[in-house]
Amino acid sequence: MLTASNVLIGLVAALHIYFLILEMFLWDRPYGLKTFNQTLEAARASKSLAMNQGLYNGFLAAGLLWGLASGPDGYSIKIFFLTCIIIAGIFGGITASRKILFFQAMPASIALVLLMPS
Image (cartoon, rainbow, N blue to C red; front, side, top):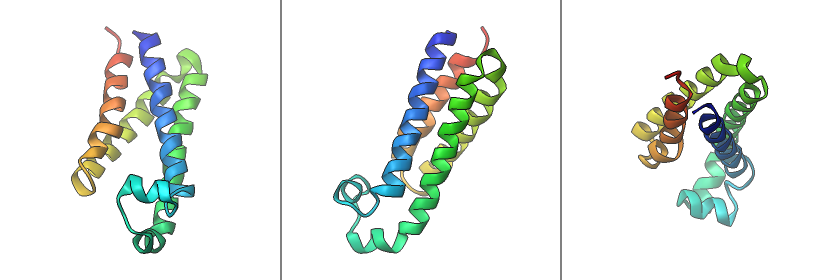
């Protein structure tokens, strides 16, 4: 189970790096506009907020990678960052888009369940 959990944690970290790229660098580009279904004007008006959000996603990814790199000593680190992602995903699912529940909260929740000792 530990291997499956670590693989999924790596995928969750990769997702958050992808979110960082989308929000920090592609927000007002055609791919970002299509991904977030918004106009160029709306994207330009919210770009600094999106960049801030992207930076936070990068910190979440860094925390998960830190937990993975720490081996057995990274157990608590992984729990902390997965929990942060789950809470942020639930909040985003309630306040922004239900898709966030599936793309952010669900993968982190599965990884957290797999991480727990049997």
